[in-house]
Amino acid sequence: MKALVLGGTGFLGTHLCNELIKRDIQGHRYIPITTGSEYDLLDSDSTSYLLNRHKPDVIFHLAAYVGGIGLNMKTPGDMFYKNMQMGMNVIEGFKFYNKIHPNTKLIVVGTVCMYPKHTPVPFKEEALWNGFPEETNAPYGIAKKSLMVMSEAYRKQYNTNIVFVIPSNLYGPNDNFDYESSHVIPAIIRKIHEAKENNESTVTLWGTGNATREFLYVKDCAKALRFIGENYNSSKPVNIAVNKDISIKDLAKEISNIVGYNGSIKWDTSMPDGQPKRRVSNERLINAGFNHTMTNLNKGLEETYDWFRKLKRTDRANSTRRRIKKVS
Image 1 (tube, rainbow, N blue to C red):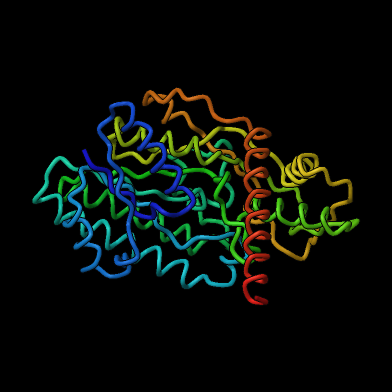
Image 2: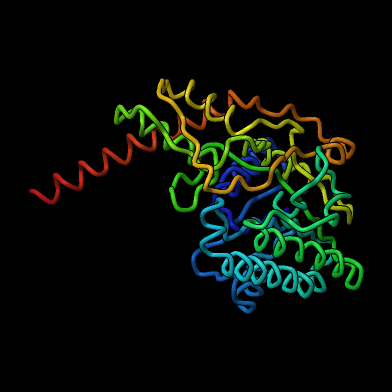
């Protein structure tokens, strides 16, 4: 059986491909195929060609235009259009593909930003329609929520096996550490790491620090996606979560300890906190049979920081080699 991973070279996609490859080595049937630069999911013909060329049995749609609060505020139109267009092309293309290749499966990955701004914790899938998403994330969240509706509508009308998945906030090795587009954990790691390197006495972070977030280690999410690909076929959306949250203030302290930074942290309260509180129920996934023990946050943060330090050392080495080459 072939698995096509759309967005397979991205943050979550690389870990999912590694998980599928590992299973294949153990005699499992999945053979992951990532998308290449010759395919444009914003183009419907290109998307259909991709599906028909590779003839997958299961498709994971992970491709997304995504970033932290800053990028969401800067490019809300792109957040809505690009994610909506890619998802519509994949689902519509799958409809036609499934007619020729029945018994195939599409897994569409959404976002925890789909949930209403004020949702009782832990977030349960039944609460998705109980209000409007947090404003800074709304274009992205509503685009993904619309794709959830489309998935259900196509399942009903065309009898397609489309499963909709909602992971909580991801972090881990291979994350995006760019200041303009990164999420909260890589942004804080980079700021605190650079403050330590530059002997800065303070670090300024966005918001009040009082908002809470739940963080899901990316390798755990990959394992859950593999499980869903093998076992979950319900029309009901399913969270991938750990059902534990932490305040951003406590998160910053945890990262400071891991980095070894002894300076102080200031909070820029003129900048938004985002959603006030976020902790997500994993009950539906557990009831479906998923029993993997999720990675402890401290351990996950340590592994993420180790990966980031290796990345920085590699970048410095490459920069030195470029300077030497230029001089010579």
